[in-house]
Amino acid sequence: QRGQIHKDEERGLILYRKMKDRSNCLKLLFGLQVVIGLHRCVGFGSFAPISAHAHTVLSPRPTSVSLNRRVPDAWKRKGRSSLFNADHEENSPPADLIKNEAPAEEKPAKASKREMMGFAIPALGIFLTNPLLSNIDNAFVGKIAGTAGLAALSPATICTDQMLYLFSFLGRATTGLVSRAYAAGPDGKGGNVNAAREAASAPLTVAVICGLVLSGLYAAFTPWMLSTLGVNPALRTDAASYIHWRGAIAWAALAQSVALQVLLATRDAVTPLKIVAMAAVFNVIGDALFCVWPFRWGCAGAAAATSIATLVSSGFMLRALAKRRLLPSLRVPGAEQLRSLLEFTGPLLAVTITRLLGFVAMQRQAMKLGVTQLAGYQLCINVVIFFLLFAEPLSQLSQTKLPSLVDAEDGDAVLANLKSIASLAICGSLAVGGLAFSAVRFGSGIFTGDAGVQLLAQQTAPAIFLNVVTAIVCVAADGAMLASRDFGFMLAVGISTYVMQMRLLGSCGSLSGIFSTFTLRLGIYTVACVVRAASGRGALGRAIQKRRRFAIS
Image (cartoon, rainbow, N blue to C red; front, side, top):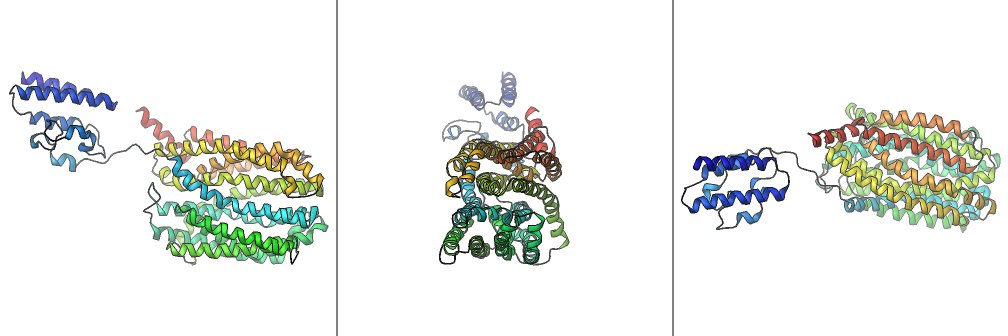
């Protein structure tokens, strides 16, 4: 009879190993408990061997959860006979089973949208500040200097904002290097401050050097740049004054960009938000003083206000890094640091150049249409850039959360984060696209009093809606590609879509046509990213594919 009972126990325990549903497992355990209890009542003696055997069989796979955690507390109450009752020594598992239990794969916690929003909302405020101030500059210049002043801002911002965008690879490289070095936990805490500080040293040094060189180039070659772009001679004086002011502090702007990315890579979005908000107040006050009264400098006044605000925010940003012991030292990068930096900067620079050339081509096509069309383009492109940056926090989420997961090929966690970010991007894109449409369709009078410019902007509103919706989803996908360092793919698609856009721009005779080429380019890139990840190619796709194979097995 004891032998038959032992066989029954083994059959039940084997069945337990195959059952995945927790409730069914608990029912099986309850049945085993009843059987053992009845046999004890009728005097068949101790079942310690069976208990020990049960502990061994019930752990067919290593798990990081202890045996006691695996069983509900109800089975551990004092006085109740149980296979897992700690009060009965004969039923307790051997100590070596617990000590030697190997850690195993735990199912990763699903990415919390609340946690993501807690990071994304402050980051959104940061990224929206600069384009918001650019639109405020447009409003001041458009009202004070008129259509000619607003048109002059278009080539001026190409030479300043877009040139600084060319060096955005430094900020993106900083995010990748620092987030990997910091290696914070899921809650954003417990990172390696010293490693993060060392990783940020090379990008900050390169940013300051590049900024100083850029300031010298602006001082010497601004007239040549405007002539090369084919700017109307009547607009060159205002455009040159704007470039000289902004170019003088290029070094501070690039240093601020790197410092900002260091803070974001260490999961701090609140501190830089406070600093940027303070700088925005300085900028608005400066616009009022230098553009309206008492100086009335027009384009130069708007540039002066922006330059002063940039210097203030750069100083406070570096101070914040010093308080957190994250301020890197300026020194010539070593061979290892330079190699790590070039892994990011080389491919990212090439990718950024293809995107910058697309913006330049769009601006030059708008110049061919006339001064009024150029003013309308300047109004619309600033609205597009402003609302496009609503997606930048989603890109930052990917760049701060995914690198370590992709390196570890943790497909479950990667997929959970991607799903959360994708749902936020899709839902947010429609809402933000509607806001962009409304701003151009009904708010163009805020930026200019010229009825012709307002009419052009209103006619372009539908194209702006499609452009912003596509751009937000595209930027979110781009963040995942950056996190997985899939630069070769990004460059290949970037070059091919740029060539396509150049061919289409030559036949565009309206602002809507110009923006439609940009929308098509972004759409093709987004689809290519999704197809690559879904097909298991690239580091991101391999991590997801590994997760699928594990699930099937």
